[in-house]
Length: 270
Image (cartoon, rainbow, N blue to C red; front, side, top):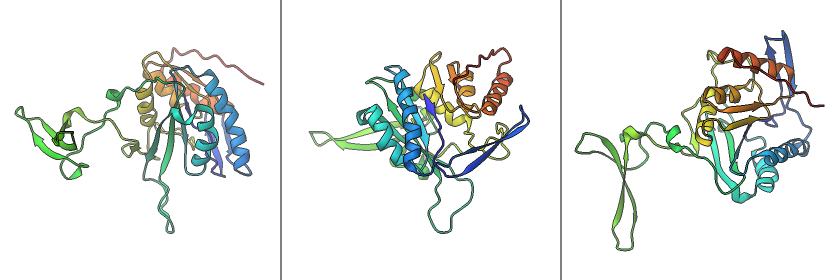
């Protein structure tokens, strides 16, 4: 599961829907943190209820409410022992503050429901930096001409130092801070004029890492449809939910452009 709910930003947004010809405004104003938590918590409880025992949840938020979400919602529902990662998605776009350090990262909380979960590290490897750009180790070359980083580890009981080889051409598993995926630029071809739209590369990393082909990806705040479009392209099943008719229209058109054979079923809950 992936959920990108309102961030408690205390802002109003506008999303122009070309499919319906309307400009839909939606509010992220809550009148206080308690109101926001009371809205989000029962929704996460229902996600936990339908999540499979070996499933996981990624919750996307930022500095406005991330501490409250973890302490008041995720830990009580999932249990602090089922916390997997606190991922910082870092980017460098938008305005620059003159009075504070720029707030230029979002938070991804990753929780499991049970004791086992999917993590495909080999599917999401990134470039291994070397030389002056590396973070530790010595650059070496083996007898076959392959470059690797030689990293010094801890000593064993005999006082011998352990050494680790990391070959550059094999890449590495990302740490829990992601700096190689930028937010959507104004000129991006995937941009749909949806103000809270996330880049496909971000969802691709999450889905490749945490699911296998034919698994089900559920997004209850589907918005512009990034999660389900990526899930569909990667051969996953998917469920997208949103209270906005315009958001569903944007998502449907996006998916039909990707695969004209997709058939949609609309389900309305009162």
